[in-house]
Length: 312
Image 1 (tube, rainbow, N blue to C red):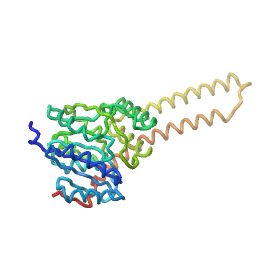
Image 2: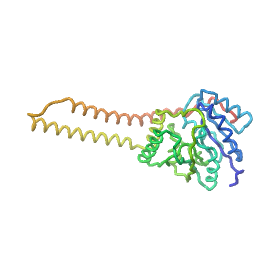
Image 3: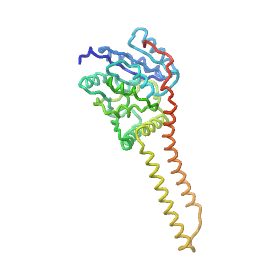
Image 4: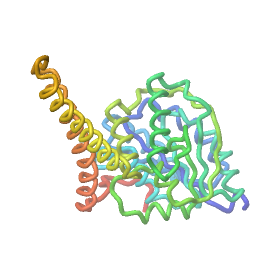
């Protein structure tokens, strides 16, 4: 396939990136200008001047396009919106903070031209992340792959290239809860990996707080595995078994060692706390699945578009 024969769509979700965007364009445009391209920014309810910066570039470059949400819907939904509007023969997604270097795009397209339908950008290391984030990320991927039948490559995020047929598959999915790292892997398209070293954030602060990271992790696990429900069942059996052992111990203590038997609150308190904890864990796990069912039944739109620039 000749380079002039295809359209490359670059999708970039944006949330309060006014400091990073002026550094993004000088690095990204020289890389993609050799291709027939469209650059789609999805403004995920930014409260700063990100909107204005993108619009200013879009005035002089009609290939730069903007979709602005009515409010913040989240990173995965912003990516899904970009896939909905992308017209390219291949679609590349990356963040605006330049931690994923745009120069890797050439390698991704080369792999795609070899016949691969998905090309993942895989980080060689996570030295730019904190020790806590590196440790929790490693644990998440190992735990996720243990629980799920869908095996997600380690150290890959949302910097990837998808062939048009993969994008069309994602568009056809009706589910509201989106964990794209799993959805991309699930159908089994032919994939390759391009390794790179992740850079420090060019400007601003990360928008992924600990709460958001935990929520994202739970979303991924629950979206692709029912084993947490099995875990709740196992905890129930374990607690019931321990309770049964406790009953035997109490009966023997009462009738065999009655002279030395002293009734106390410690064992009672520990057993109540243990049983209560197991029950709450089980109810919480079931509640997460019920909550996902509730969202799907509502059938609300994934996002609400407030404004479009350079898009039909």
